[in-house]
Image 1 (cartoon, rainbow, N blue to C red):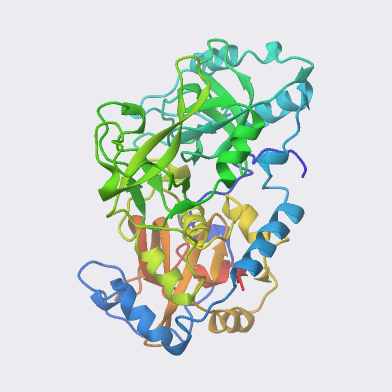
Image 2 (image 1 turned 135 degrees about the vertical axis):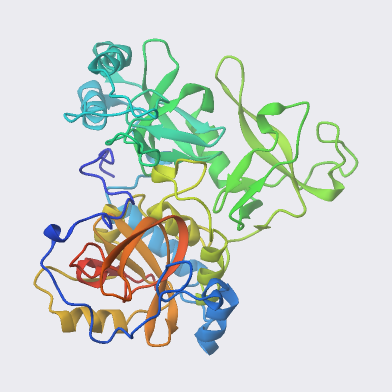
Length: 476
């Protein structure tokens, strides 16, 4: 695998969805002639009724195909192997280089931690002093990177933000914004494999490589050990896979580091099946939970593994869920109403993370960002270009199936079915646009996981969202 970072904005494309775009960004088109006249409901989201918010409504509409297995486990393993072999945006951490050229590490950091040229603002709306970035750059201590870097392998021990610069300070492009933190890149989950390539001068931040991203994370949220420990934890069986939106370990007064620890959809944890039936787990009887093993950080930063309890009520499975239309729908709806979190901020997820976690609960791996997902050579897709006709676009929409991933610049949606002549999608978005009953363009802030009808959606005053589709990915 080529070792390269996933670059920050403007190169990377997480999911603010360019639904904020104005009509100047694309040639104007009239609304689709096939879009039915729609009344605007009280909530203002055109085409959305209460029935559309029930996953079983869409499962029933899928009919006899709802439980059809789209890829069996062997085919999924082959697809994941193809992704590793063909897509440079993902990497196998078990095979990560044991030594990396220091100039390459510096180049990765400089590509990520690129000082903004425009003004930036803090959470209070105040302009950020350039001295702030001066201080960050000094703290990164890039001149201390050796000629040859020996990566230190480890695991994330908590959910951890991945940042463009080594700071938790939230920075925005416009005064008054509180959502789109321009320093937020992604997140790692407990048990995610990583390699530490550099640390700040004070050691409080680490620049890490993970399977789908390179960025800064707080050192306190990782632990390092041997490569074999990292790889072994990831492959250990038997295990449990989180199939709910999230699961949490029980409260633990003895080990606060594994107490009420959040495990997001798709996270896999080893199951300690040989745990003695009567032996307490940090003071709690194990009979009413699952005894799992979690990575933890010792005082010296080294990796250890400790038992913890997941309650029996946690939504987990011994194996990935079958890849079926019904499961794609149900898994997507587990996040319905969750707050939109740019770059996995707000303890939530963004559009590309949303679809990644849905598919990961069925064992399918995807690249991290919309840009990489939309163009991945390992994924089957229909490509639409600026030269695609309106008829070609409508034909591509008509051909969509449940679970298809629909990409516009900077955003992805998942198709869930059709109703009353329209195509419906579920997606994690900041917002979208419509025409109201008077034909006027209305920008609607949504800021969460939502269901919308595709045909009425607009990506600007004069641009239908259908006319911005670049790719439709089908995982079959």
